[in-house]
Amino acid sequence: MLFLLNSNKMFFLFTLFFSTLISISSNSWLGCWIGLEINLLSFIPLISNPNNLMNSEAALKYFLTQAIASINFLFSIIISLFLMKNFINNIFISILINSSLLMKMGSTPFHFWFPNVMEGLSWLNCFILMTWQKITPMILLSYYFNINFLMFIVIINVLIGAIGGFNQTSLRKLMAFSSINNLGWMLIALMISETLWMIYFFLYSFLISIMCFLFYMLNIFFINQMFNFNINFSIKFSIMINFLSLGGLPPFLGFFPKWLIINFLISNKLYIISFFFICMSLIMLIFYIRIIYSSFMFFSFKFKWFKIYLKNNYLNLINFCSFISLLGMIFSTLFFF
Image (cartoon, rainbow, N blue to C red):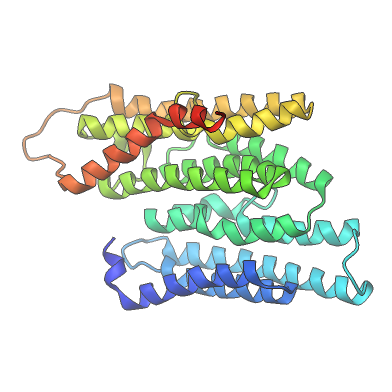
């Protein structure tokens, strides 16, 4: 967290924050586009970190994909304004706008840049990319979407997110595919209502923030690092709780927003889609459990010089967040009273 002391990084964080507000509060498509551009140009300096070998590659990949998406977005807006004086439900235009916004947020079938960019970032930047950078495109998508096209995209998102995580040893790539899977849930929540999307997004951001903070504190980037040393048992327990919560296992907080979405899908007789979503969540749990298993079951030799010291207040914060995740079901049942 030392980068917060750097005034340049603080300035770019500030512009990153305000560019999102510019986009979502703009009353014209051009204003939305300007907000997206400021967002892109303020995130790239945050990526640059001399300690990371892959940062320049990640920054270049991120810049090129976002620039292409922005060009498509601007092009589709201009076409719509030239061809039609006002926005009518033209299928071609809506698919163009939706595609450019899906590319912005790293959704399938434009997701190929997302795991590669994640691989070159620090955990804090990974957190920003998985949460904050998705807000603007998703809110803009809610203004004007093609429901059939988006339903198809949602199904592919959930499928690719679940299957892509196999054979990955990098935790950052695993979290990227997890993010793609959760994006499918978020998009279907967005199609239902913005309130449901906000509930899902806030709880997802909360869980992702705990995971990224834990990995940042322990300086872990690969699965095999989980059993290369002995972590404090309470931290191992926290990793287990938060991963299972992120997978959407019932007693934990992460199940609550998924429960709401499944509840809505079933009440609207979308049984096949809800069944598909639940199956893909189970596949996601398989590779979360792989990580948990490796940290719980394998112990390396205890070397006296190899100790992990965490500041007490950090440990208390992690334990408190895990406690909230653990009591999720109690909070969620109160919601229905």
